[in-house]
Image (cartoon, helix red, strand yellow):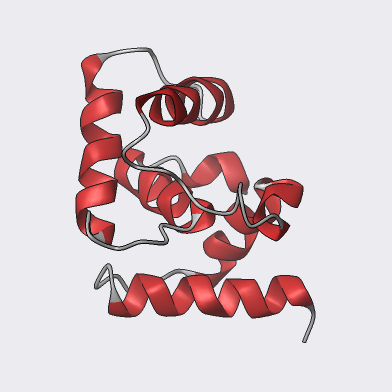
Length: 113
């Protein structure tokens, strides 16, 4: 297996065990690929849920630019819901998993088809 395949398996396990979500592996793979090289860097592979600037960047670059959503309070609520689903006490919140949860939350799977 490639490094990316190993990471996808790790993300799928997080979705199952920590988020209690049965992942759509095809969508998870596409979301992971969409993250690009960020998934290979220790600093950028995770989302710092306590960093307001990082959450704002996630909102602007992923939810608004990538998913094409309007900038409303619902975006911040969805980010918080995804972090709650992952578990606020969970130290490593992988970017691909958070993005996957947000794609599912907004029903934007078509962006990755």
